[in-house]
Structure formats: C-alpha cells, structure tokens
Length: 127
Length: 396
Image: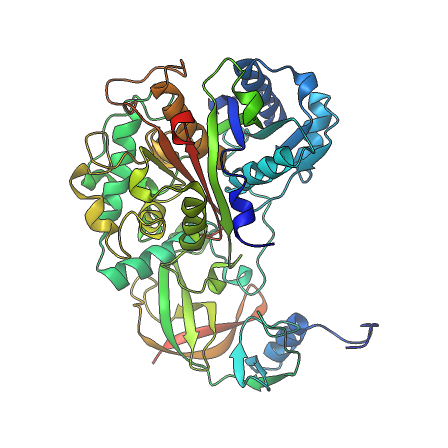
C-alpha cells in the first residue's frame, strides 16, 4: 500500500459502501484461497495482503442465537444471532421473519440487505 | 529465551496485604475515592507505608489512564506502572506484570487496585467502544455475548437452564455464609427462582447474571524475601498465565472453548500443581455459563461434563469442589470488573486457614486447611483469560 492513504477508503468503509450499493461483499485471500470476515487490511494471523472482494452467496447456517428482551415501547424483543456463512466465516446479524425466540441453531438462512436505524445492514431470513 | 524462564518467577513474589472498600452501595463516594481507600487499607493490612510504594497497577471503567490517576491521587511517583485494560481480568494480568517488575528489581512494593461506584451513579458502567460489524445489530453487551455462548453450550452438550441454575444456587449458598456478600440476607435460591426470573437475553435471566454493585479492592505485593518479614501470612504467587484470542463475540473461534484452556494449562504447569490439588477454586462468574466453561477449560472435568459436576450442590458449601466461596459475582459483589475480588477470595481463604483474621464467616464458609487456590479472571466477552495460582509457604 502507498504510505499516503488520502483519496482512498479502508476496508470497513468499502464494506459499507458495497452495502449501500446493495451488495454483500466479503474478502478472500487469493494466495490462501480463504474467505474471512470481518473486513481487514490483511489476512488475520498470517498477514497476507493479496485480498479481493467477492460477493457472498448469502447462504448461511445459524451458529448460535439469542432473543434479546426489550420493552415494547422501545421496539420489543429482537433476535441476535451468529451466522456461519457458506464461505466459512462467521458474523453477527439478526434473523427476521420469525419470532425472535424461535430461531434455532443449525437452521439454514439467506442474507438480504435491509436497514437498521437508517444504515444498510445484512439481515438473514430462514429458508 | 525458552518457556522455562517464566517458571523462574514461581514463588518469587507474594501478596502481603489486601482490602476491599465500598462493596455494595457507596453513594457519595467517587470511584477513585473507593479505590484509594482500598489501597490505604491494604497497606495498613500489610503494615507497609505508602512512601514505600513504587509500583502502581490499576484499571477501571472510569479512568482512561487509571494507573496514572491513582498514582497522582495517592501522591506516589511509581518507578513502574501498568494500566493495561483487558476487561475484568486486568488485575490478574497486573499481578503477573507486577511479579515480573518486582523480580527484575524495577520496584519493591506494588499495589494492584480497582474502584467503582457504578451502582450508586446509575448502573452498569463500561468504557467499551461500539464494536464494528456488531454495534448496528444493537447487542446488549456484555449479556448478549454470554447468552450466545450459553445457547451454543446447551446445544452442543445437551445442557439445560436447570444446569445453569445450579451455578447460581451454589453461589447463593456460599453468600449466605459470608456476611460481606451483597445477598447475604436474601435467602437461598431454588431452580424455579432462577428459571422464572425476568428474562434478559435468552437463555439468560436476571439470576443468571451477576450483581451490579459498587466496590473497590487492592492487594500489596513484594518479593518473597521481604514478604517473610511482614505481619501477615504471605501468600505466594506460584503460577500465572494469560491468553486471549478475540475481542468481539462474533470473532470467538469456538463459543464453548475459551482461552482459559491455554492460560490454565500454563499457570498450573508453572505452579507444579494440578487442578485437583486446589483447596479453593475462584472463577470469574459474571454469568452462570462462565462457571461451567471455566471448570472445564481449567481441567476440573472434561469438556461438556461441568453440568454433571455442578449437580447435587457439588460446588456449594457441602460439595466436593469449593467454588466461588465468597458467593461470586453472582451473589457476593460485582462492581463492573470483578477480577480483583476473585483474587481477594483466593487469598483470604489461604490466610484464614493460616490463622490470619480476614473476617468472619458462618460455619462452613471458611475452607479448613486451605493451602492452594486458583484465581481465574475473565475479561470482555469470554475474551481475555488470566489464571493465577496462589499458595501458602508449605507449597513453595
């Protein structure tokens, strides 16, 4: 990378920019042929920097799930899950379209880009 | 440098004074005032003058540069200070760093301290920044993270909420024997009490979660040659190790295996003792799931078997394993970062068994003939894990 980073944006902002364009992109290390999440400037643990963005399949499996209890006037209960993507990495997200306490480990889910508090967000639906 | 070098620290340093301050509710006291009171009380306990303190170690959720703020408040000019912040286990890592600095001759007297007035100023206090890639989903940290681990644990090992409840019940039973415990007067818990408590983040309810209290604590450490000449029974640091592999729960490699596996293995190896040699077991129980995970990861049973180990009140006062004998973070005290209280209890049990007056307990609250204690600290979201092994002079 050039020393002067001005005029470019880092991987976190690139990820958000992709989401704004309606694309759920994750990084892949070309030499290792391995995907990872969250976005970084180099492959975690070994530091390879030959990275590329690839559109995620959006297919995933619920790794764990929780129902976060919240007063109705504050928006009510909501789901918070960890999803293992088909490409390998894991991420935090919400599973929607089902009661927040009915999401079970092992269920197959599919990503879509929605919004949370006005920001684009990856949300999963049960398939 | 080979791995054996750290083992040369075994038994080289000791705690010679300890104190807690403002535990429960301390309205009208600042976090610094509570912390500094604990330091002065710990020095009084040790019979060491403030002027002799040349090493200061502290972390809080109130001070971005806690070691520096505490030094200034005390009027101490430390030759070495460390305010490393790795969450609630910070103090157990400070103890390792203090031992290294003492052994290297950088300092002669170290204080390790913590203070919080979170409860009296409104509730759980954190200085954690929002986590990228997680914050937008609005997790209720830290409880959401521990709930995700608990859910996965229940799935992988067929554990139930009743198994988690056994941890809370045992903690309360210990608290009933400890007049210092916040819930000392509250009576015992039943499985039904725990299961019917207000749900917070499923599968964790209110009684699966630690208390929210005020409180401060401090310990005083010296090299062992000096420790022998102080007025209290010195408690020697026999083993210490740390490890962490994530900051965010979404990055935890395996939700049911913590890096206590690594910290515990190295700390026990350094001490020359095994888990089953421990007279008391003090674990950072911010949530009921913690105790199950750490009993397994530190080697008290195999992975997935802690739910059997905690049955039949086996970790309570009448049980075989003396776990969290003060009542733990669940039923004794939890002022936001609990690590130094895990340490205090490990030390107090050993000092009491050696004849020091470190307070009163009801019958069964003190462990007879206790010679070795493990203190295990956890920080972040099952993130940083630090294990300390403490022993009396016969164990050196």
